[in-house]
Length: 111
Length: 114
Image (tube, rainbow over all chains, first blue to last red; front, side):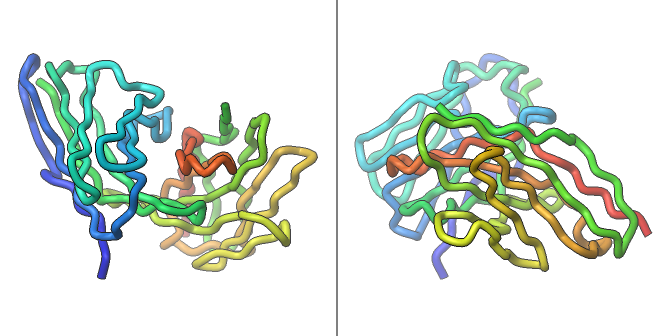
């Protein structure tokens, strides 16, 4: 069965370190998205991609970057982790308006 | 641009009682509407969606929602809730310009008590 997987599921890192969160989907979707979930804010869009070599900034993109070298993967990089980036991160993919498929999430703690 | 407002951050309800979770949206273009459910420590699961046609849509687990264009609302309802319905519920919209970006509300925590 097709799926979307995120790794790691949990990570603790130190302030100032570079961190990369992985997202891999086997749906063969062109569109992929990264969200962060924080209490009281729901899910906010960080970055998204509509295909290979395409990346776009979302609502809360400062301090984050993505790259899309193939259809299956959209890694999210925190250039220099800050405590404000402690959050739960969700990756999603979609190729139609019928709704996106979400990964299980990565809980990131920056200490 | 679109925005979504979920008016209630938490809704406590007794088991077997009816429930309504409210969602209002704002958009200058036509939109698709969604409700997602998130159980503890899990990802988001699509509950139901409105794309076109009948304004009353039925989803999984006995939930339904009604699209009201004049009131820009998409409220979620269930006639009789179970303990297992305790979860976080998110309303979301995306525009019809094929961008498929989901814009989410802040979520409503449904707490079902015995």
